[in-house]
Image 1 (cartoon, one colour):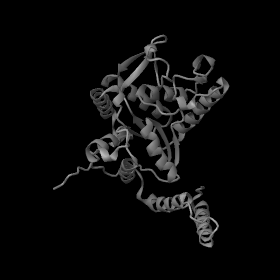
Image 2 (spheres, helix red, strand yellow; image 1 turned 45 degrees about the vertical axis):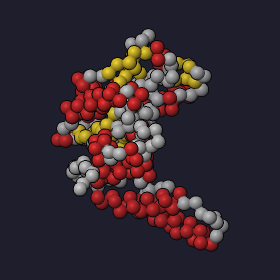
Image 3 (cartoon, rainbow, N blue to C red; image 1 turned 30 degrees about the vertical axis):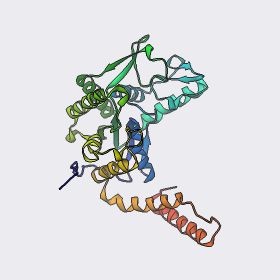
Image 4 (cartoon, rainbow, N blue to C red; image 1 turned 180 degrees about the vertical axis):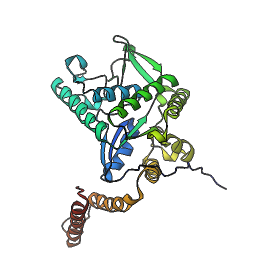
Length: 314
């Protein structure tokens, strides 16, 4: 008997290799996949504005980056002894206003360059639920623990999400017509919204994405959510919170992504880099032993070889 399903994934065209430049935006699962790219030393830029959960937040920051918006005092606020911006994640919040504004504007400039030059843009959507600040009537990316009574919680419709994704595509293609845009839905369960509400939210995202996917126009869908829900249909693939995929699940989804989107010719180099990364992470019983010193010398030779042949640094 077969107790598993497997999501079929054909090899994509215009795959990722070591000449590619990748920009990843979106939910916390973006960082899981992005960290895999960094581990294997691909040229990847992950969430310069921090984690972004919904499409409206991503659309706004792509718009701002393409137009090179300059953040000013009017865009930030002080709360709980830190300066925040409703457009970005709390990871960017700082104790000094000047630090926050400097980081925001640096992120705008780096993302502007990335959108113009990247070969691949990977966007992971997490939720259709949004929070609208009552006072300003503005949709925020993050509430920064401001009391919930200051916001209205709303569910974006499929039409609203579709319009937002179409705007994202049009904006990015206006400066980089040949970029490959890969949409995916985060397998992280937003159970604070409720079980039914989470399912509804994810279904809105999936429905909207499939309205805009068109491989001939370099717009694609990768089924991260479906792999987790249908292939890895078991709680042993979750962390103890029963919400986030664990390392086994992340590795499995990464392997499916690798087999779909990464050029086979890159696999050998990935294996060499993985061996070095594991060597660098190794913790010896006796750091001063002759055997360990020889291990370090051999490891350094491998690092030097990759730097010479592929200009990859560790």
